[in-house]
Length: 122
Image (spheres, rainbow, N blue to C red):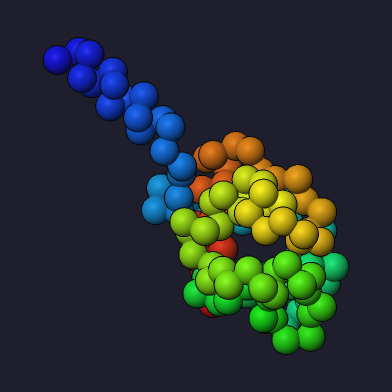
C-alpha cells in the first residue's frame, strides 16, 4: 500500500500545475515582477507586449492595435490554463518564431498563481 501512495505522489508531482490550484493574489505579485515590464493588465493598454486583459478564452494574436509575430497569429491557440502553463514555461517551445523575449517561468507554483491571476482579468 505504501508503494501505491508513493507512486501516486510521484505521478502528481510530475503533472503540470494549473490555475485551479493557484492563488490569484500571489499571482498578481508574480505578474508585477515577471510580466508588467512588457504587459498591462488593463483593457486596451498595449505596451511592448499586448494587453493581457481578457486573455482567457481569447485567440492568440488578436489584440487590436498590437503587432504580433506571424507565428503567434498562425498558432491557432485559444488561451486557457492548460495552454498557458506550457507557454509560460517556455514560450518559444510552444510557439516557435514568437517574438516574445521572455525565457519562461520555471517554478510550477508561481506559474499556477500567475495563471489564476490572469483568469481574473476580465
